[in-house]
Image 1 (tube, rainbow, N blue to C red):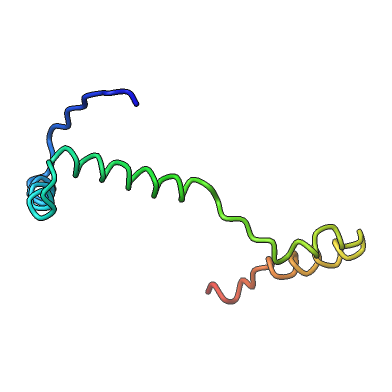
Image 2 (cartoon, rainbow, N blue to C red):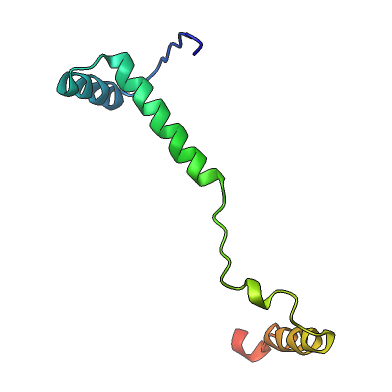
Length: 88
C-alpha cells in the first residue's frame, strides 16, 4: 500500500460537520472517515461503470429471416408517419 497524503479543501460546512460528527460517533479519526467515504464512493462508481447484462432475449437473437426484417421495418415506417391534422 502506498502511503499518500491528500489535502481536500473547500468542503461544504455541512459535509465537514457530518464527517466530524461521524468521527466522534464512531470513535474514529476524521481521516479514517474520509478514507471510508472514498472507498464507498469507489465501490458505487465501480458498480455503475459495469453495465448489467440481461440474457432473457438471447434465444431470439439471429432468428429473424430477411422477410421478417422487411415486415418489421414496414411496420416501423407506418408508425413513423405523422398525421398533419393532429398538429393543427
